[in-house]
Length: 113
Image (cartoon, rainbow, N blue to C red; front, side, top):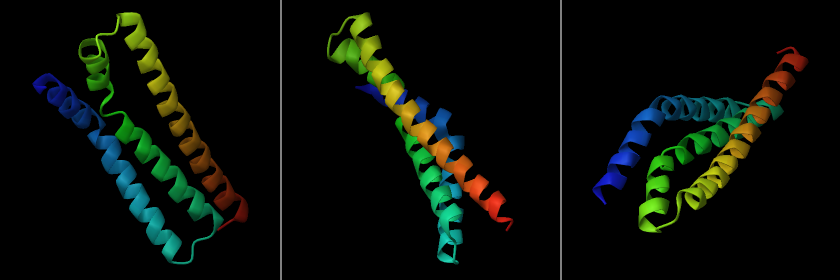
C-alpha cells in the first residue's frame, strides 16, 4: 500500500506545475466569461478544463501500472495493454483540450478584439 501512495505522490509532484497552470487558466477563463465573454471564452474555459482533467489523470499512472502488475497479478503484456488504453484515453482528452484552445484563439484573432 505504501508503494502505491509513494507512486501517487511522485505523480503529483511531476504534474504539479501543469496542474497549477491549468487551474490558473480555468479561473482566468471563468472570470473572462463572467465579464461578458463570448464564444472564444467558452472554448477557452472548455479547453482549459480538459487540459486540467488530462493533468489530473496523469497523476496515478505509475501507481496504476504497479497495481495492475502486482495487485491484479497480470502479466507484463496485459498490464502494458491496459496502461496503453489508459494513455490513449488521456491523449484523446488532451487533444480535445488543445483543439478547443486553438479554436478559442482562432475565433478571438478572427474577430480582431
